[in-house]
Image (cartoon, rainbow, N blue to C red; front, side):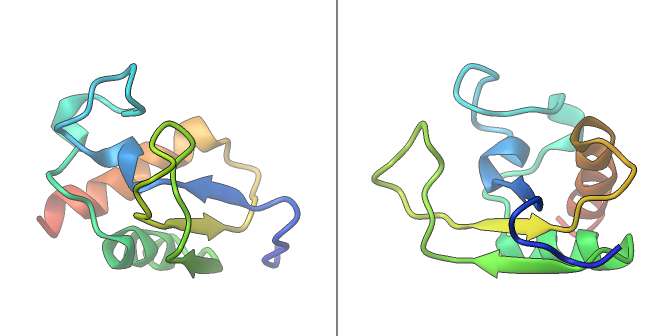
Length: 96
């Protein structure tokens, strides 16, 4: 598939932040999370999975509208977001 911004999956760094609770936005178990996840590492995970992506730096996670951490938008595949997140997280943990 190709990258289509209208249907792309948004990956927020908050999904991978070990210091956040699930209620604050963390979507994975702490074993798959890191401190201060970086957009470049998240994008590297997408690249290793052969996904097209786009880095948006001036975006804020909806629960923290004043903090502009950015996000990575990746192409939608046959893999669901729930299955994609742990695969990206493995790259984050290896490159911590």
